[in-house]
Length: 268
Image (cartoon, helix red, strand yellow):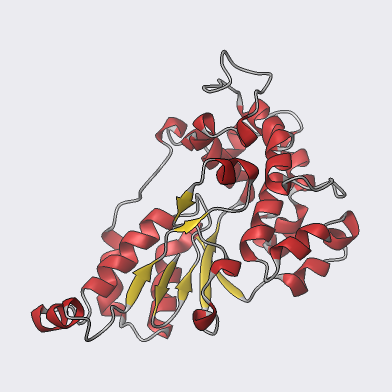
């Protein structure tokens, strides 16, 4: 998570978080960081206007078992003194988000709960098709993020992950997670006040947001020239729709319907 004097950024995985972190570090390094200001920071007389927190991941059994830490802190992990700041994050088309996770391949060496899966030549280096990957995420992957709770809703891994990331009280929300909770949209009152940018138009939306925070548009022009980062090159430019064979699109749409209710712009 990135905390600035103006706002907090939550980095939801595979939504441009590496790009955002780099962009904000460059922006804030260029504001008031001359030699005199740098000396003041080193002497402890002033505090930097931006800081990054690397926090424990407590959302899944597998992350806890491996004692993983990362920049992907949740709303519930924001230190209390910063809770009054505006909070932003980025959303991506849920279909595209699944494809990005699949092709990026972090899961290959971080299987849910360290379990064996019935695909591939070896449990520690599975060779799964996209359809098999989705099957894994809706099976042991979902169990991993539910962390021992009973399944009481027809819900997907990505939705549970989202609720844990952006709810004010994630544990209570997961305990309340039923089909009625989703279909009657009771979840809306439990989500924290997050302003979501869209990955598909991230640079311009980020520039407009930063302007609202007092940064001139001239100072953020450089964002247009920054390269994309952490791309899954295995995709070779393939559109997400090419991965959704058979009934996969309908299945994902059903399991992740909460996300499409929140972001109807992706429900096309």
